[in-house]
Length: 100
Image (spheres, rainbow, N blue to C red):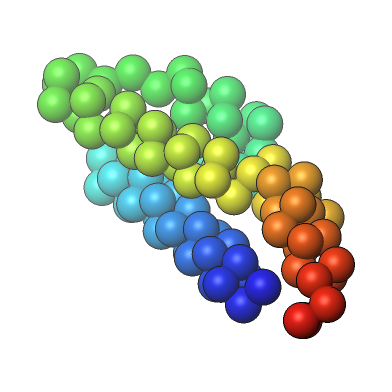
């Protein structure tokens, strides 16, 4: 169970780091979202609407988007939910193990 908790914590930290990298990339280009809260649906729509003149910027931005999406998938939708089905199986096995 301890390793499961550490894995979840690592995944959350990785997600925060990847979001920060993406935000800092945009900030260096003078792009700041001001129409609401970051990481909301409106923010995601804004991110998807961004266009870059330089191919290298477009490639880097897409890589940052992919990294965030992968970390979100790793954490799972509702990653803060302790009853996330992705982790429930391991937690249930742990609770049912008489050695624990």
